[in-house]
Length: 482
Image (cartoon, rainbow, N blue to C red):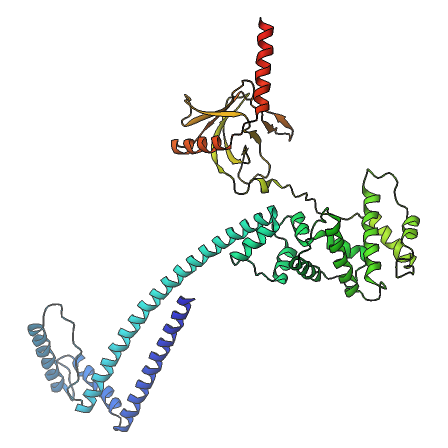
């Protein structure tokens, strides 16, 4: 912004200089005209003088002697300049000797002004170059700020998915979101990167502020000229209904009020819309849940909704149309149970690339490791949503080891002997139990190896049950051997 402002000052300066040059030229012309055409006479005399200087000595005709004399004067003047002037000194422009003093003064003024303008143009060029460099620096800084803001926004969304209230608080405190119910509702309505279950939980809270957000959120939905099933499809796609009955009640009440506001005259009251909305959701479950054997018929659906319109009946054709709509196309409820693994891997204890030695096939493979929640996860790529393997750190130990093929190695092993309790995903998607007696891992540098060992040691938990079980197994084994 500062660079652009400075550039506008430079443009204004250039315009002033040009205007000044034009006014100077205009005033010079006016002065010349008032002095009886001195500039015109000067140009004529200069051309005449140049013509005489360029003629050879043996020119015939009138003025030939004058031409020879002019040539001698020119040679003498040139000799004088070469004799007196310093080597490499700038060549001074010749002032015609046949100009009047006023004309000579005018010519000197024009030449001086020209040099001033050229110097000013050069200064402005340098200033423009400085401004352009400054603007590039500012654009780079703005780009860095945008990148930082995007990172904070991503962190805020993840925090919201883990704890909606904490996520909103983080976004507001970092000036990423305004604290008004309308702005928060717009953020939830767009839903970019947000967990649908988390949105539903936040909207269903009974705090006064949350209720205002819920109202603003519902008002963002446009239900005009939609039948009730169409409106429900649109509404239920923007979040996932929470499991708590009181939260569902508050959200469906807000929906019914909004639908009646957009479609006045369809129902006698919002209560009728509310009851029928629940009946439609129940119908959807009855018709499309394979565990429900007693499917609701259209006749029973019509019968169960009689008298709900302030004591009166809704048109049977309306109810039958709603039934057929649900029968032909179930609600597309967001497949989101709130257990997205991205929540687990947010803010890990440690993460980075390591080499892991295979269990059955002894080859080293590069994997992205994440240490969190007393487990060590490894992925094939950083962008993978599902880990290739999980190593619970319960009752494990870690030690530094030397390997003939790889440097900076350490091992995870079971103190009680036997296989390390872990699982991995096969290429065909099957999850199988790992077959590692030890997990040998190589770090890129000694410092990273030491940091990984330190972090894993802090995450290892002990359960006395496993120690008791191991002791009992040893006792049984010793009895058998004796």
